[in-house]
Amino acid sequence: MPNDKEILGALSKIIDPDFNRDIVSLGFVQNLKINGGDVSFDIALTTPACPVKDEFQKQAETLVKGLSGVKNVSIKMTTLARKTAAGAQGAASTLKDVKSIIAVSSCKGGVGKSTMAAHLALELARRGFKVGLVDTDIHGPSVPALFDMHNVEIFANKNRHFIPVEFQNLKMMSFGFLLGESPAVMRGPMVTQYVNQILHGTAWGELDYLFIDMPPGTGDIQLTITQTVALSGAVIVTTRQTLSLVDVARGILMFEKVNVPILGIIENMSYFLCNNCDKKHYIFGGSEEQSLKDKFGLDILAEIPLLPQFTAKIEDTFANEFIMTAVDNTMRALGKSSILQKQIPEIKFDATYTFFKWPDGEEVKVKNRDLRLSCRCALCVNEMTGELILKEDHVAENIMPTACMPLGNYAIGINWNDNHTSGIYPYPTIRKLAEK
Image 1 (cartoon, helix red, strand yellow):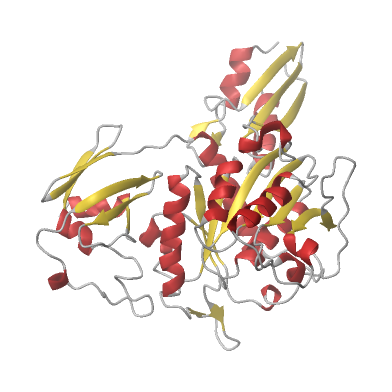
Image 2 (cartoon, rainbow, N blue to C red):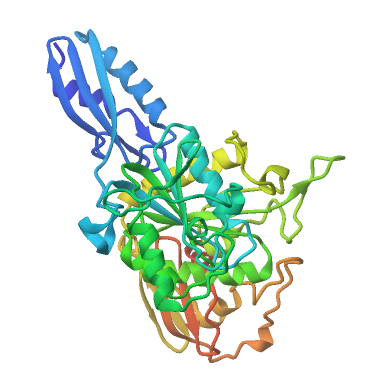
């Protein structure tokens, strides 16, 4: 008859690729029970849609069945407990039974944020998960147009909560459903009230995931959402167009200031493939060798090409390899963010150097002028040509930071005494500069 030590030893051979640790030391194996030759246990994953879920289950069954004395193996795939998503609204919120809430943001209109939010939600619903999508853009709601639902009648239940509209098992709510074709003419406090109402006053029920299609910008509405909802993470959608990238930097800084983990970037309209060749044509500049990860330090969840199906209204769910990749990578990032602790360096600076000291003892220092000249923001580098806009003779010898803000495990934001504030400096860039 097998014992606990043997079973856990076998299961410790399963390595989570995102943490590079075994599932036993990560605490994923729970409720182990042995009854003669019958073995049962749970594998609690970081998120229900974990892409390696089936692989883990198959490996676990094979490993445990291979032990002497084991006749039957029963494995229950579950998820680790997370804090409630209701945020500041607590029990009064209809979000209390939502496991994870993901904000989809761009901070600039016209980059396909709403389209990406809809397709991410639809892909997870297509896989059988309980998913919702809420459109919080009061002044320019996109969901009614995306799904061609212009004359939807919204009902309320006995608790006076809105009943969401359903499409292919996806629950949706938008202020556009309530307003119809009329323009939303209202001031800030009223806008905030309506956003809270459709977020916390819609009968979402039990959901695995709720995607929030965020309005453009970094103002009161965005802050209201981040302060009243316990966001599990944020996905940033952008193109490589210069103005979009300037706003990406602002969005990153906003989410970091309110302690919302950024899961990564979806680069939409990244390139197109012409009919006569397989070459990727990057219409907003850049190349296959260049990545926005080099600029911001964040993982690229997907590069979405220009495709006809993303320009039309959504009439049915369909499997798309690019969206499937984006969903898989988003789920993996969501899982990592729930466990990994921030490894924030201690940052100091003087008139000449900026000093970094990480919790593991690593220390580096970089000359302030070298750091300022390394900025790759859209104001310092031409996105189309890659040419440096920032010239060496434009940077004073006495340049130095006025403030530094750590950004997760990936970068820092710096305010400089020349009033430049949009630069984001990935830690790999900092370490390379320190080697000079």
